[in-house]
Length: 128
Image 1 (cartoon, one colour):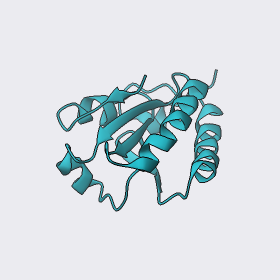
Image 2: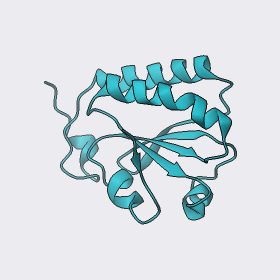
Image 3: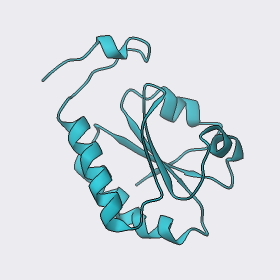
Image 4: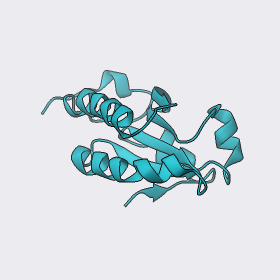
């Protein structure tokens, strides 16, 4: 299941998250958003608790859409410690998205981290 986030819960669920968050900006009318949803669920199950997946209705959360300068839907942002680390937009279909998600998964699942606060996160890396 994908957590739905709004402007009210964004700071707590995304910016203050102890793990990287893949934010999916979507809209109910967006056909490509519906097509990629199963791929995102698969990505979430493969990453387990190392990357959190949330979705945001871009139409209902205009301030967030404006803050992150959305140009098209769907737009995926990988946010770690409040910083956008990856931005995926304008992909042409499942294969483009699958390759981009695989790259993200490999970069994050190969380096486990433990965070105590967002400001000190870069200083506190632990290997298992």
